[in-house]
Structures are given as structure tokens and as C-alpha cells.
Length: 273
Image (cartoon, rainbow, N blue to C red):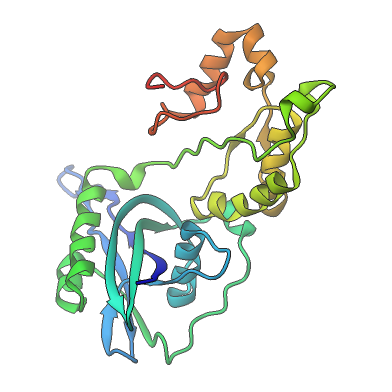
């Protein structure tokens, strides 16, 4: 059975602390954005199928924008569901998502709103009301899981992405300064595809090695978003070799330990590797 890939999100707001009259702060309730689909006469979370050449995070923010009219930045992944649709297996990946004003959004293409035949109403509801309205049990489970994550502080988290440069020309066949070794055509294509992923997670601050293949990898995103990037020499191979302490300090300030044990050695070594 062939698989249909799709993505969406649990869009949230609320949770702010407000001072109370007696000096004890109170927290506003969390609310979640759900949509009504007249074709199925159901309430669901915003989601939809990937377009050709699209990546899952880009699909999630596009579908949310189409169905709800809001631009979000993704947080932690919440879960994946799969179910049969017209003889095919549909797999949907969901993220926690927040409406944010970020320069990252400038890197996204314009999104045409969904027609009223597809989505005819959107509502912000608390978890209790969401549990009453949402049609699918998995959607209700995701809302409960999302609120649990928010109460644990995940709504205040900031995504950090460690990005290796795209496919570069062969090091062994490069006869001049390695800092000038550029991306291959495949690497330039990878750099273009990276734009939608960085934008989906709302990346608005960047640090990069000044070497050419690294700068080329993030150049499309910098151009699309208007974000500035810092290029400390200690993030290059030679700069790190000359001053490893400064290199480690820079990495420690900008990125956590690699969650999967993979980084771009030797500048971003992971203790698990």
C-alpha cells in the first residue's frame, strides 16, 4: 500500500502569567485552534498533504496558514498518526505550533486561503471544549498531549538547528585553499530546500563558518528572510584548530549537545559521538 504523507499542527496561545489582586499570579488558560470541514461535517486540527518536492515542516506551516489564516513557527514534534484513506495509507506528522511575528516568515511564499467549501469556520477553544468538538480520538489525544507539554514549559523553548553544509566539491580533488571549496550543484539545490525548513521553525538568529561552502548553504535563507548572520572564524576548521577553547565557547552559547550524536566534525563534536 503506497503512503500519503501529510503534516499539521496543534496551534496554541495563552498561558501568560498575570498578577492577581492578592499578589498571587494567575495563568491564562491555553487555547487551541481547530477547524470545521463542511465536506465531512467534522472538527479537526489543521493539516494537509505534502506537495511535490515539499518537506514535512514546510507542509505543516503552509497547511496551517491555508486552513486558519495564521502564520506559525513550529516547536516540538507531538506525534504521528496513520490511517487508510481510499486504499492508501495516510501518515500525518504534527508539531506544536505558535503564532509568531518573525522575520523567518518573510522567507515563505504567499499562501492562498482555503475555500469555504474546504474550511468554513475556525475556533480558539480550551482543552475541555476541544475534547467536546474534535471528531477524531487521535486529535483529542494530541490536544491533551500538547497542553501537558505546554505546562512542562515547552512553549517557552526555542528551536536550535545544527546545519551541516550542503554537498561540496570533493576535498581530495580540490587543489587550492579549502576555505574556498564551494558547493556542487546538488549542494546548491539542498541550500534552496533548506529555506523552507529554517523558516518553518522560525530561525531568526544565525552563526556560520565563514568558509565558502558553509556561507553558500545559508545564503538563500539569508536573502529570503533578510536575517543577518554572524561568521566567527572559530567556527571554521582552521579557526577552531587555532583556538579550540573559543570555538567550544561559541558553540556552547549557540547550540546544545547534538541530540542524535551527529555534528559537523571537528568544529561541532558531540560528546555522544
